[in-house]
Length: 355
Image (cartoon, rainbow, N blue to C red; front, side, top):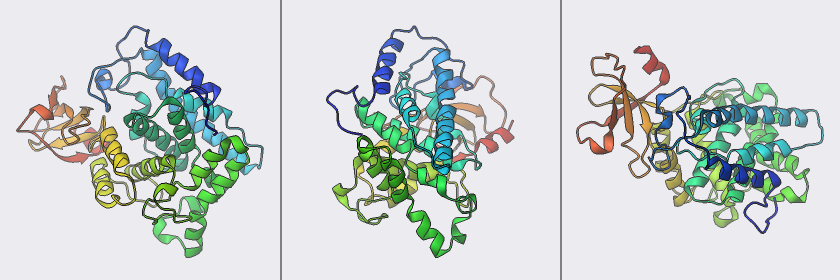
Protein backbone atom coordinates (compact mmCIF):
# COMPACT_ATOMS: atom_id res chain seq x y z
CA UNK A 1 0.00 0.00 0.00
CA UNK A 2 2.23 2.79 -1.20
CA UNK A 3 1.80 6.47 -0.45
CA UNK A 4 0.10 8.55 -3.12
CA UNK A 5 -0.31 12.26 -3.66
CA UNK A 6 -4.03 12.79 -3.09
CA UNK A 7 -6.50 11.64 -0.47
CA UNK A 8 -8.54 9.70 -3.01
CA UNK A 9 -5.68 7.99 -4.82
CA UNK A 10 -5.12 5.13 -2.36
CA UNK A 11 -6.98 2.80 -4.69
CA UNK A 12 -9.79 3.41 -7.23
CA UNK A 13 -12.51 2.11 -4.91
CA UNK A 14 -11.66 4.82 -2.38
CA UNK A 15 -12.23 7.54 -4.96
CA UNK A 16 -15.57 5.99 -5.91
CA UNK A 17 -16.56 5.85 -2.24
CA UNK A 18 -15.78 9.54 -1.78
CA UNK A 19 -17.85 10.40 -4.85
CA UNK A 20 -20.74 8.38 -3.45
CA UNK A 21 -20.37 10.15 -0.10
CA UNK A 22 -20.73 13.54 -1.78
CA UNK A 23 -23.83 12.40 -3.66
CA UNK A 24 -25.49 10.97 -0.56
CA UNK A 25 -25.14 14.25 1.31
CA UNK A 26 -27.60 15.70 -1.21
CA UNK A 27 -30.24 12.98 -0.64
CA UNK A 28 -33.20 14.13 1.50
CA UNK A 29 -33.37 12.56 4.94
CA UNK A 30 -35.98 9.88 5.57
CA UNK A 31 -37.24 7.92 8.53
CA UNK A 32 -35.29 4.78 9.28
CA UNK A 33 -36.68 1.28 8.91
CA UNK A 34 -33.85 -0.19 10.97
CA UNK A 35 -35.13 -2.64 13.55
CA UNK A 36 -34.38 -0.40 16.54
CA UNK A 37 -36.45 2.74 17.16
CA UNK A 38 -33.30 4.58 18.21
CA UNK A 39 -31.83 4.41 14.71
CA UNK A 40 -32.63 8.05 13.91
CA UNK A 41 -31.07 9.32 17.13
CA UNK A 42 -27.50 10.60 17.10
CA UNK A 43 -24.84 8.00 17.76
CA UNK A 44 -21.37 7.59 19.12
CA UNK A 45 -19.58 10.49 17.51
CA UNK A 46 -21.51 13.46 18.73
CA UNK A 47 -25.11 13.03 19.86
CA UNK A 48 -26.66 15.07 17.05
CA UNK A 49 -29.64 13.75 15.16
CA UNK A 50 -28.73 12.49 11.69
CA UNK A 51 -30.55 10.26 9.25
CA UNK A 52 -29.94 8.41 5.98
CA UNK A 53 -32.54 6.95 3.62
CA UNK A 54 -33.75 3.44 4.56
CA UNK A 55 -32.14 1.96 1.45
CA UNK A 56 -28.72 3.18 2.53
CA UNK A 57 -29.24 1.89 6.06
CA UNK A 58 -30.14 -1.57 4.78
CA UNK A 59 -27.09 -1.52 2.52
CA UNK A 60 -24.95 -1.01 5.62
CA UNK A 61 -26.43 -4.13 7.22
CA UNK A 62 -25.83 -6.06 3.98
CA UNK A 63 -22.27 -4.74 3.79
CA UNK A 64 -21.48 -6.53 7.04
CA UNK A 65 -22.29 -9.92 5.54
CA UNK A 66 -20.57 -9.04 2.26
CA UNK A 67 -17.37 -8.42 4.22
CA UNK A 68 -17.75 -11.79 5.95
CA UNK A 69 -18.40 -13.59 2.66
CA UNK A 70 -15.41 -11.89 1.06
CA UNK A 71 -13.15 -13.03 3.89
CA UNK A 72 -14.49 -16.58 3.61
CA UNK A 73 -13.58 -16.55 -0.10
CA UNK A 74 -10.08 -15.29 0.73
CA UNK A 75 -9.62 -18.01 3.36
CA UNK A 76 -10.78 -20.62 0.85
CA UNK A 77 -8.33 -19.27 -1.73
CA UNK A 78 -5.48 -19.57 0.79
CA UNK A 79 -6.45 -23.12 1.73
CA UNK A 80 -6.46 -24.14 -1.94
CA UNK A 81 -3.11 -22.43 -2.48
CA UNK A 82 -4.58 -20.26 -5.22
CA UNK A 83 -3.43 -16.81 -6.34
CA UNK A 84 -4.66 -14.25 -3.81
CA UNK A 85 -6.93 -11.48 -5.12
CA UNK A 86 -8.09 -8.81 -2.64
CA UNK A 87 -9.69 -6.37 -5.06
CA UNK A 88 -13.15 -7.14 -3.68
CA UNK A 89 -11.86 -6.59 -0.13
CA UNK A 90 -10.43 -3.23 -1.22
CA UNK A 91 -13.77 -2.21 -2.67
CA UNK A 92 -15.66 -3.22 0.47
CA UNK A 93 -13.15 -1.39 2.67
CA UNK A 94 -13.82 1.75 0.64
CA UNK A 95 -17.58 1.24 0.90
CA UNK A 96 -17.39 1.30 4.70
CA UNK A 97 -16.49 5.00 4.44
CA UNK A 98 -19.68 5.93 2.58
CA UNK A 99 -22.13 6.76 5.33
CA UNK A 100 -22.92 10.14 6.85
CA UNK A 101 -25.33 9.46 9.73
CA UNK A 102 -24.15 9.65 13.32
CA UNK A 103 -25.49 6.16 14.01
CA UNK A 104 -24.27 3.51 11.59
CA UNK A 105 -26.12 0.16 11.19
CA UNK A 106 -22.80 -1.44 10.21
CA UNK A 107 -21.33 -0.39 13.56
CA UNK A 108 -24.39 -1.56 15.51
CA UNK A 109 -24.21 -4.92 13.76
CA UNK A 110 -20.53 -5.33 14.58
CA UNK A 111 -21.13 -4.53 18.26
CA UNK A 112 -24.03 -6.92 18.77
CA UNK A 113 -23.65 -9.79 16.29
CA UNK A 114 -22.42 -12.67 18.44
CA UNK A 115 -21.77 -16.21 17.22
CA UNK A 116 -19.09 -18.73 18.14
CA UNK A 117 -19.60 -20.39 14.77
CA UNK A 118 -17.38 -18.59 12.26
CA UNK A 119 -16.03 -16.51 15.14
CA UNK A 120 -12.70 -15.89 13.46
CA UNK A 121 -14.37 -14.54 10.32
CA UNK A 122 -16.59 -12.16 12.26
CA UNK A 123 -13.78 -11.21 14.63
CA UNK A 124 -11.89 -9.79 11.64
CA UNK A 125 -15.00 -8.11 10.21
CA UNK A 126 -15.93 -6.57 13.57
CA UNK A 127 -12.38 -5.40 14.14
CA UNK A 128 -12.36 -3.71 10.72
CA UNK A 129 -15.59 -1.84 11.53
CA UNK A 130 -14.28 -0.84 14.97
CA UNK A 131 -11.07 0.45 13.41
CA UNK A 132 -13.09 2.62 11.03
CA UNK A 133 -14.93 4.26 13.91
CA UNK A 134 -11.78 4.75 15.99
CA UNK A 135 -10.04 6.27 12.93
CA UNK A 136 -13.00 8.62 12.47
CA UNK A 137 -12.70 9.67 16.10
CA UNK A 138 -8.98 10.33 15.51
CA UNK A 139 -9.95 12.41 12.43
CA UNK A 140 -7.81 10.38 10.03
CA UNK A 141 -8.20 11.11 6.32
CA UNK A 142 -10.06 8.89 3.85
CA UNK A 143 -7.05 7.01 2.44
CA UNK A 144 -5.75 6.26 5.92
CA UNK A 145 -9.14 4.97 7.03
CA UNK A 146 -9.45 2.80 3.94
CA UNK A 147 -5.98 1.34 4.52
CA UNK A 148 -6.71 0.63 8.17
CA UNK A 149 -10.04 -1.06 7.43
CA UNK A 150 -8.48 -3.26 4.75
CA UNK A 151 -5.55 -4.17 7.02
CA UNK A 152 -7.90 -5.00 9.90
CA UNK A 153 -10.09 -7.17 7.68
CA UNK A 154 -7.05 -9.18 6.51
CA UNK A 155 -4.97 -9.04 9.68
CA UNK A 156 -5.39 -12.71 10.58
CA UNK A 157 -5.50 -14.47 7.19
CA UNK A 158 -3.05 -17.11 8.47
CA UNK A 159 -6.00 -18.59 10.37
CA UNK A 160 -7.03 -20.12 7.05
CA UNK A 161 -4.18 -22.61 7.35
CA UNK A 162 -4.88 -23.60 10.95
CA UNK A 163 -6.89 -26.75 11.71
CA UNK A 164 -10.37 -26.15 13.15
CA UNK A 165 -9.49 -28.35 16.12
CA UNK A 166 -6.86 -25.81 17.16
CA UNK A 167 -8.91 -22.70 16.34
CA UNK A 168 -11.80 -23.86 18.51
CA UNK A 169 -9.79 -25.38 21.36
CA UNK A 170 -10.10 -23.83 24.82
CA UNK A 171 -7.13 -21.56 25.47
CA UNK A 172 -6.22 -23.11 28.81
CA UNK A 173 -5.87 -26.51 27.09
CA UNK A 174 -3.27 -25.35 24.57
CA UNK A 175 0.06 -27.17 24.68
CA UNK A 176 3.29 -25.16 24.54
CA UNK A 177 3.72 -26.22 20.93
CA UNK A 178 0.21 -25.01 20.06
CA UNK A 179 0.79 -21.65 21.74
CA UNK A 180 4.02 -21.23 19.81
CA UNK A 181 2.23 -22.06 16.57
CA UNK A 182 -0.49 -19.50 17.27
CA UNK A 183 2.09 -16.80 18.02
CA UNK A 184 3.59 -17.36 14.59
CA UNK A 185 0.31 -16.31 12.93
CA UNK A 186 1.30 -12.67 12.43
CA UNK A 187 4.43 -13.67 10.52
CA UNK A 188 2.49 -16.21 8.47
CA UNK A 189 -0.15 -13.58 7.65
CA UNK A 190 2.61 -11.24 6.48
CA UNK A 191 4.09 -13.98 4.30
CA UNK A 192 0.70 -14.65 2.69
CA UNK A 193 0.05 -10.97 1.98
CA UNK A 194 3.55 -10.36 0.63
CA UNK A 195 2.53 -12.47 -2.37
CA UNK A 196 0.37 -9.51 -3.42
CA UNK A 197 3.48 -7.56 -4.41
CA UNK A 198 5.38 -4.48 -3.27
CA UNK A 199 2.34 -2.17 -3.46
CA UNK A 200 0.98 -4.05 -0.45
CA UNK A 201 4.19 -4.22 1.58
CA UNK A 202 2.83 -1.92 4.29
CA UNK A 203 -0.37 -3.95 4.53
CA UNK A 204 1.69 -7.10 5.01
CA UNK A 205 4.07 -5.52 7.53
CA UNK A 206 1.27 -4.08 9.65
CA UNK A 207 -0.41 -7.48 9.94
CA UNK A 208 2.84 -8.81 11.40
CA UNK A 209 2.71 -6.11 14.11
CA UNK A 210 -0.91 -6.42 15.32
CA UNK A 211 0.18 -8.17 18.53
CA UNK A 212 3.20 -5.94 19.18
CA UNK A 213 2.94 -3.49 22.08
CA UNK A 214 4.56 -0.14 22.89
CA UNK A 215 6.43 -1.50 25.93
CA UNK A 216 7.92 -4.44 24.04
CA UNK A 217 5.68 -7.01 25.72
CA UNK A 218 4.04 -8.12 22.47
CA UNK A 219 4.94 -10.70 19.85
CA UNK A 220 6.36 -12.01 17.55
CA UNK A 221 9.35 -9.63 17.62
CA UNK A 222 8.95 -7.64 20.86
CA UNK A 223 8.93 -4.30 19.03
CA UNK A 224 8.82 -1.12 21.11
CA UNK A 225 7.60 2.46 20.76
CA UNK A 226 7.61 3.99 17.30
CA UNK A 227 8.76 0.70 15.80
CA UNK A 228 5.11 -0.38 16.07
CA UNK A 229 3.13 1.16 13.19
CA UNK A 230 0.12 3.31 14.04
CA UNK A 231 -2.17 1.03 12.06
CA UNK A 232 -0.97 -2.00 14.03
CA UNK A 233 -1.53 -0.17 17.32
CA UNK A 234 -5.08 0.86 16.47
CA UNK A 235 -6.01 -2.51 14.97
CA UNK A 236 -4.45 -4.38 17.89
CA UNK A 237 -6.48 -2.33 20.36
CA UNK A 238 -9.72 -2.79 18.41
CA UNK A 239 -9.08 -6.53 18.10
CA UNK A 240 -8.48 -6.81 21.84
CA UNK A 241 -11.75 -5.04 22.71
CA UNK A 242 -13.66 -7.05 20.11
CA UNK A 243 -12.31 -10.33 21.45
CA UNK A 244 -13.27 -9.47 25.01
CA UNK A 245 -16.84 -8.45 24.20
CA UNK A 246 -17.88 -11.33 21.92
CA UNK A 247 -18.37 -15.03 22.52
CA UNK A 248 -15.28 -16.89 21.39
CA UNK A 249 -14.03 -20.47 21.57
CA UNK A 250 -12.62 -21.16 25.01
CA UNK A 251 -12.52 -17.48 25.98
CA UNK A 252 -14.41 -15.37 28.49
CA UNK A 253 -16.93 -12.84 27.22
CA UNK A 254 -16.96 -9.61 29.23
CA UNK A 255 -19.77 -7.06 29.49
CA UNK A 256 -18.79 -3.99 27.48
CA UNK A 257 -18.32 -1.85 30.57
CA UNK A 258 -16.07 -4.45 32.22
CA UNK A 259 -13.98 -4.89 29.07
CA UNK A 260 -13.50 -1.13 28.71
CA UNK A 261 -12.57 -0.75 32.37
CA UNK A 262 -10.07 -3.61 32.19
CA UNK A 263 -8.39 -2.23 29.06
CA UNK A 264 -8.12 1.29 30.46
CA UNK A 265 -6.67 -0.02 33.71
CA UNK A 266 -4.21 -2.58 32.37
CA UNK A 267 -3.12 -1.36 28.93
CA UNK A 268 -1.78 2.11 29.73
CA UNK A 269 1.77 1.11 28.85
CA UNK A 270 0.95 -1.00 25.81
CA UNK A 271 -1.13 1.46 23.73
CA UNK A 272 -0.80 5.17 23.13
CA UNK A 273 -3.00 7.34 25.30
CA UNK A 274 -4.71 8.99 22.33
CA UNK A 275 -5.81 5.58 21.03
CA UNK A 276 -7.20 4.52 24.40
CA UNK A 277 -9.13 7.80 24.58
CA UNK A 278 -10.47 7.25 21.06
CA UNK A 279 -11.61 3.73 22.01
CA UNK A 280 -13.52 5.13 25.00
CA UNK A 281 -15.07 7.97 22.98
CA UNK A 282 -16.11 5.56 20.23
CA UNK A 283 -17.81 2.98 22.43
CA UNK A 284 -18.23 4.58 25.88
CA UNK A 285 -18.72 2.16 28.78
CA UNK A 286 -22.19 1.32 27.49
CA UNK A 287 -22.30 1.12 23.66
CA UNK A 288 -25.26 1.91 21.45
CA UNK A 289 -28.20 -0.50 21.82
CA UNK A 290 -26.67 -2.28 24.81
CA UNK A 291 -28.94 -2.99 27.78
CA UNK A 292 -28.46 -1.57 31.27
CA UNK A 293 -30.04 -1.57 34.70
CA UNK A 294 -30.41 1.71 36.59
CA UNK A 295 -30.12 2.34 40.32
CA UNK A 296 -33.92 2.69 40.40
CA UNK A 297 -34.24 -0.91 39.21
CA UNK A 298 -35.50 0.14 35.77
CA UNK A 299 -34.08 -1.47 32.64
CA UNK A 300 -33.34 0.34 29.40
CA UNK A 301 -31.39 0.32 26.15
CA UNK A 302 -28.73 2.85 25.22
CA UNK A 303 -30.15 5.18 22.57
CA UNK A 304 -27.29 7.66 22.34
CA UNK A 305 -23.78 7.92 23.72
CA UNK A 306 -21.93 11.10 24.66
CA UNK A 307 -18.17 11.01 23.96
CA UNK A 308 -17.40 13.39 26.83
CA UNK A 309 -19.72 11.59 29.27
CA UNK A 310 -19.01 7.86 28.74
CA UNK A 311 -20.87 6.83 31.89
CA UNK A 312 -24.01 8.84 31.17
CA UNK A 313 -25.70 7.91 27.89
CA UNK A 314 -29.25 8.64 26.82
CA UNK A 315 -31.45 5.67 27.75
CA UNK A 316 -34.70 4.41 26.25
CA UNK A 317 -36.49 2.97 29.29
CA UNK A 318 -38.08 -0.44 28.62
CA UNK A 319 -39.20 -1.60 32.10
CA UNK A 320 -39.80 0.28 35.32
CA UNK A 321 -38.55 -0.76 38.76
CA UNK A 322 -41.47 -3.21 39.11
CA UNK A 323 -40.50 -4.74 35.73
CA UNK A 324 -43.63 -3.40 34.06
CA UNK A 325 -43.14 -2.81 30.38
CA UNK A 326 -43.03 0.80 29.25
CA UNK A 327 -44.45 0.67 25.70
CA UNK A 328 -43.71 4.29 24.92
CA UNK A 329 -40.00 3.80 25.62
CA UNK A 330 -39.44 7.11 27.40
CA UNK A 331 -36.02 8.66 26.78
CA UNK A 332 -33.89 9.76 29.72
CA UNK A 333 -30.58 11.56 29.30
CA UNK A 334 -28.42 10.61 32.28
CA UNK A 335 -26.23 13.68 31.78
CA UNK A 336 -29.19 15.77 32.84
CA UNK A 337 -30.46 13.52 35.62
CA UNK A 338 -28.75 13.84 38.99
CA UNK A 339 -30.74 10.98 40.52
CA UNK A 340 -30.46 8.13 38.03
CA UNK A 341 -27.30 6.30 37.04
CA UNK A 342 -26.36 2.92 35.57
CA UNK A 343 -25.44 0.20 38.04
CA UNK A 344 -24.66 -2.61 35.59
CA UNK A 345 -24.78 -3.84 32.03
CA UNK A 346 -27.15 -6.70 31.31
CA UNK A 347 -27.26 -9.05 28.35
CA UNK A 348 -29.83 -8.94 25.59
CA UNK A 349 -31.07 -12.32 26.82
CA UNK A 350 -31.61 -10.96 30.35
CA UNK A 351 -33.51 -7.97 28.96
CA UNK A 352 -35.67 -10.12 26.70
CA UNK A 353 -36.50 -12.46 29.61
CA UNK A 354 -38.30 -9.55 31.27
CA UNK A 355 -40.82 -9.31 28.43
